[in-house]
Image 1: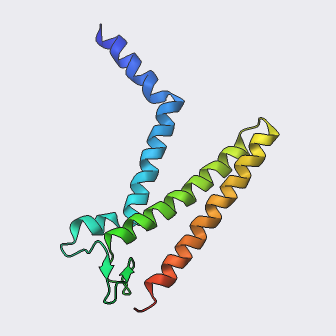
Image 2: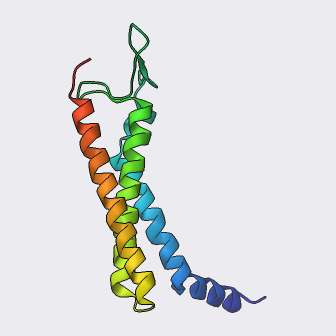
Image 3: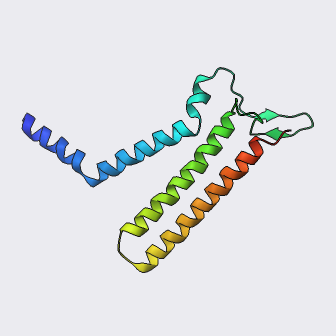
Length: 132
């Protein structure tokens, strides 16, 4: 194969819609990892997995803003992922014309995902600042 043919195939791959969606998905996941606190969890030396209380209780959220558990990082990441998934469904339903039934279901499930993500983030915020 000549160099021109290889460069043409690579250029076609980069310009394809699938590659654009993959790049956007990778950027969104990178943003979610950064925002959810994964960088802190990986770089801090004394991060706890969970907090085990006397009497058999387990706490996921540390009641201070200065620290974070690994479980808290994963939960917040999943809530953000649900929110972005809901936004993605909403954008797809709004921009693509097609079957009205499909659009209706996409709008309904995007609303549910964003609602559960918002309620989950709110309950995590409340749990974070509620003492033991």
